[in-house]
Amino acid sequence: MLFKQTYVDMSRAAKTLLAFAVYVVLLGVALLVAPATVIRILRLPEIATGWARVVGLLALVIGVYDFVAARADVLPYIRASVYVRIGFAVGIALLVVSGEMPVAALPIGAIDLGGALWTAWAMRGAR
Image (cartoon, rainbow, N blue to C red; front, side, top):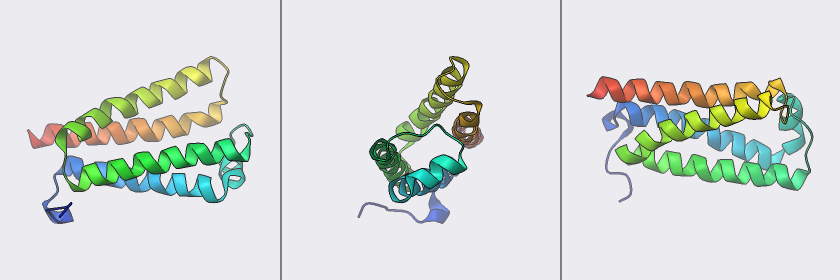
């Protein structure tokens, strides 16, 4: 049995990662199904549909990893996700500052940063 606990039994940190996983999976599916629409809504630069779908597939894979780790309450993964999501937000900010991405990309990084801080806060409360 992959998941030995119910949602109620999950740690607060795991629940935050589960919520983030849902967001990432939905974004990944949206990019796979309707990449041009997502890019237009987010006001991102146009890219080839195939590449947008590759990004969507990567997001879907990461979201599934997050979902499984959250449901299994894998603390080392949950802890690592905080640093990875902060790194992603910093990376987005650097791409905007360097002019490679428009300011419209900042909310994507902000969502990751917010999710990472939420998870870090939940982990701190568990100590």
